[in-house]
Length: 326
Image (cartoon, rainbow, N blue to C red; front, side, top):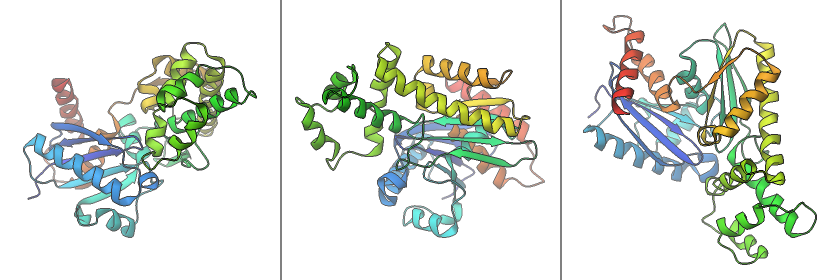
């Protein structure tokens, strides 16, 4: 039975995060699970992963339904059309209660709360969105794994594997990534990597996990790994600076995604690189994580002009309940 619960979900390529809030903004619970980028793993597997997370979340909240489900999808570049939403819903979700938007949209919702600014995502892939003074969205990156997106963990991982192969074949510099490859893929000889890379269980999300070895090696001074990481982050900074230069009213920049969240040194390096190009920006974490941003979109879509609680009060309630649960 549907309730007044709003669920927001950040469907990433490696990990999916969900949050349930009441109509007054009180956070009821959060849950995580496997990635749900249907461009990478197919729509059936993505649907099943989201369904499992929602089932666990509702159980955690002691609820048996929800009013609206907002999915921020790394597989989308714009709101899903009716056919895509219906295909994703399948037999597991009610399409009339489902809203599917891009992961950048929910990240922006949580980052700036509707004010001009920019969100830069470096997760499995990378994407950035700028909200200008007129409320218009401007997007860059987010092309996916085939062309590749700089700064995303999948790109870092693939380039790290390439650096190890080049070192093995004598055309690249010696690098700690060779030993890291042997360990991560559990192989005893370099050529055994072929079988691992093309085994049925390998997904873009699982391969992207190798990026942590690339990042760690770069942090520890490995030249090949450092060239990969700094080259990627520099490319993201250049793109962000160009976009901000076109819309200078956007002075707040939120950094989102595992590459930033789990690697403070890389986050700090990127901040300095961007500030060298565009001084006086306010760069930091988002006001709320993307899954809360998705819930905010759901809350706004279900409100009426006669609502007895304002959005400002809702945001205060979300902040209080997040602090209480931390």
